[in-house]
Length: 236
Ligand code: ZN
Ligand code: FE
Image (cartoon, rainbow, N blue to C red; front, side, top):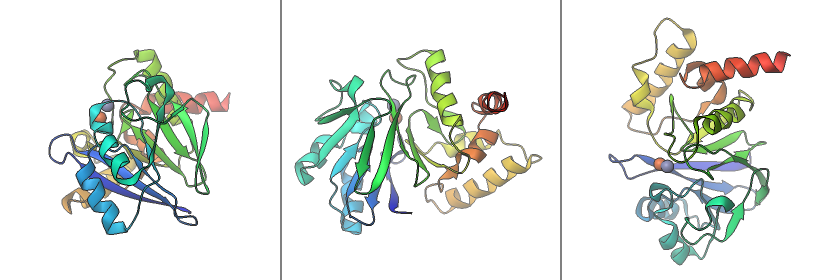
């Protein structure tokens, strides 16, 4: 593992966004994924003694870009986000499209377009580090609302996620785990495991640890059928 990932809870108790501070360990190059608001992110950056080089933005909503201007001013960093939403994202420097590859130091990241929640929403996939940043497309046990795209687009975006390997850890844009917990059954092993992992961390008031896409495909009600279809396709 060459990529260190630190979650930062933002807009706590209101929207419970997650920003993530990433650092490529071998080079020290670092980035903030979805700079929701500046204050908690700056506090965490100071604690970690990190000066970020980039902001990686998944989509244009205010709760994902609210800290862009202030952080750019503080750190003279570059802001990267979906080319399709370039006019809507404050201070955007570099627009990315589906399939583009970006390197954070030595950590390689691929852009996956994932329309539905917004028209230009993108995901950041660090294949080698087994990390996927899902913004407002996929949450623990739920998915993002379809605001700008169509249901078909959202389905395609979720299918893309389901096609990724089971051992990839995913990092959502909000802490919504507790909302989906009550729907989990105690009789299915994977759902029991999910509940235990989530409750253990939520009770300590820490972010739920990143869970694997494999477990999410089994437990997230929105992914279950899609994942089953993907499995059938992969066998054909
Ligand atoms: Zn959003
Ligand atoms: Fe959001």
